[in-house]
Image 1 (cartoon, rainbow, N blue to C red):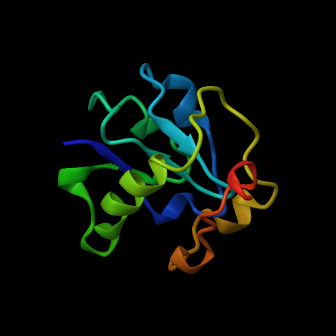
Image 2: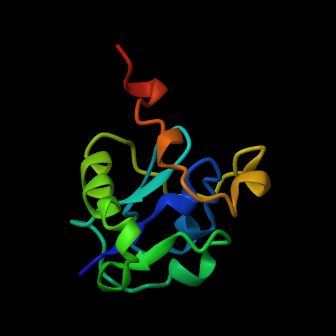
Length: 114
């Protein structure tokens, strides 16, 4: 099992979770964070730190968030590690409770564009 960042993180990107992770398994994209399932040690310390309640243990994922298992695994291979907290996105509070945000997920990191 691993922990999974879900849709609630999109366009918020709070990083409170990152600062408590003992193994640096978070990866940062333009408007979303993911957890590398290969690096996650299943400690769960990140879950209560997320202001958007976006992190779930894989076994407890809501049915409508199941796709995020594959999204986290795939994007963790593409995005750089983040191991220190940063300011959330400027309009994070406006997006924190919005549902149906998958369409806003930006996958292309500026650092990796050719």
